[in-house]
Image (cartoon, rainbow, N blue to C red; front, top):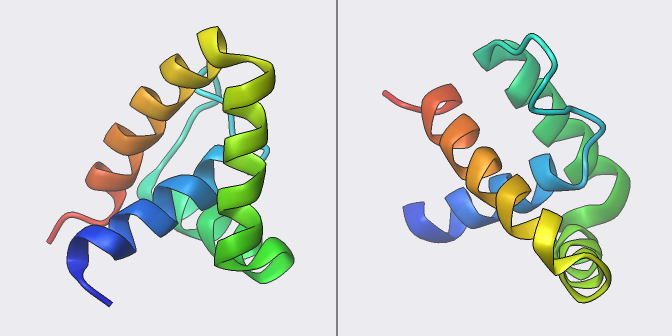
Length: 78
């Protein structure tokens, strides 16, 4: 799996988690939420749920994905 694809999977997993941008977050909390979502839904299931949200609520999904990508990049930075 390429680093870019791994980042996408992590972002999709965080997107479908219960973590909110208004919550106090730490890298550990982000990584835990990602692992839980992947275990619960699988990578493809997370992607399907993200697609559903973009179809149902595109206005809020775009903002959430922007936040999610930043959070994932910070949590998994070297």
